[in-house]
Length: 362
Ligand code: ZN
Ligand code: ZN
Image 1 (cartoon, rainbow, N blue to C red):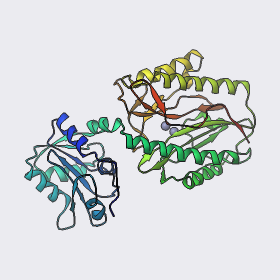
Image 2 (tube, protein in one colour):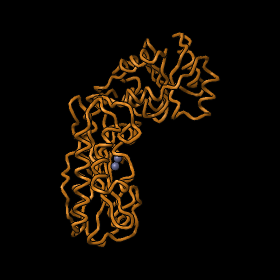
Image 3 (cartoon, rainbow, N blue to C red):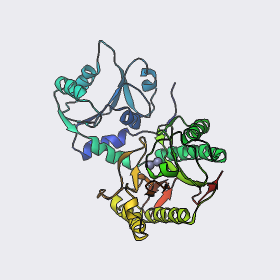
Image 4 (cartoon, helix red, strand yellow):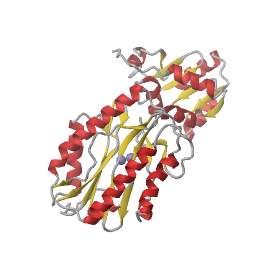
């Protein structure tokens, strides 16, 4: 069941060994295995040495692993030949001394069992792997745009259904159904649908309160397509909007544009965040923007790095991050606008195509 794939990350991961002075890298999390091989397996290990790559998996996935076009050898694991034995033989054969591993996703039990069985130095490689994953390649960007388009279609088909009197929970169900119908493989996360005073809590839960005329309604949603996540937030007014609501919406939108204008490869997440944060503070709402400007995303909807006051390292070309400032007035209303951007040498390209002018619906 071979499938043509443009994905061959073995050379890139072998270059990582060189850069990090590792003899080998052992990938144990489903996400990292997928990144390396483009095959999703619930069980498996991928070993990358300077000589090549091996995909260890069980009966359920061995056919897919064998058909892999990009140069990984496939080895079947079973009760008689467990992972630690197969990997141990390969490490001995290739004289591996230092083995990078994913310390942030391996459990202590797994670590103890593996480190007892394998006579090599285990070197934490989670950070280096995420640095590599942060700069997305062309195939990843294609998939992320595809995910964005699907989510946008689902959202646009949901908009005409919004009515005062409908509960947040009912609207969330309509949105979820349309995201799947538009082509979602999964959802990036359970959509956030909050209105009125509930929208003043950035990650509030949809509830049974009916959406009312004059509410701001925040919808934050994303889909997974071919492994990659989208993430979008739009705030719409239901029926009517006061001058204050329009003013706050406009500040958030200008702050988002300011942050996006500041974004390009080589700047730090802190600088991008500050561009938006300073504008909101100048307008007098500084204390009401309590979260970061954005987070990195890709195979996971939240990946390490992003744009917040604590991000001091420069972001690379190809980094994909959300641009999602907000203003939240407790007990009253909230506004958040979220796009997803990719950094280039000269600026940022917006992967989100939805319009952002204030929409009054229902
Ligand atoms: Zn979001
Ligand atoms: Zn987000």
